[in-house]
Length: 215
Image: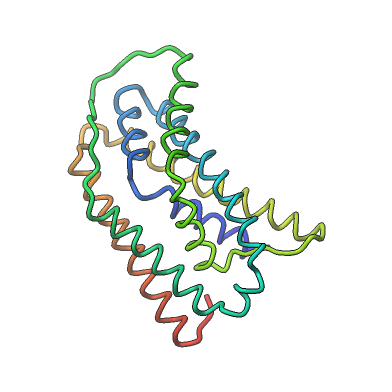
């Protein structure tokens, strides 16, 4: 159970951490409207990611025979998928207008922040391929129709939710504390650091898999 929780949290963080359009939007709203709006934006993205995680989870369970018979190859492919995704994030500079002004907004705008972030994230179904890579990389595949399997699935998906929310909480906290130091160059630098770390982890994962070391 503990390995499911830890894997789920790591998957949630890995999906949320690259600062693509939603990440930039979260930072912009944190700077211009306040941290609460940034958190609501992150929550909208998290709900979208959770839906795709559920879809991926059910899809992976249907191909378990193939996965079990080709686990090494699939783990390597999963690492490559993650690596390619991070290289894409690394190379593309995010484009957004970030303001440091203090805008006053009504509480009704929270729902708009949530919905727009959800729609922006949900409009990219390619995120499923990232989930497939992460599920294979962390061996996060839960099968079976027993009560225990259903509990494990619920705990795993909840852990993904926790991991994603943990990232957005941390990001908005840092942006709020360092609001005068944030710019597009800062975001691009963060992207490069995150992307480089995850690419190194993927390369390490491929090497360990080829050496027959499970992870």
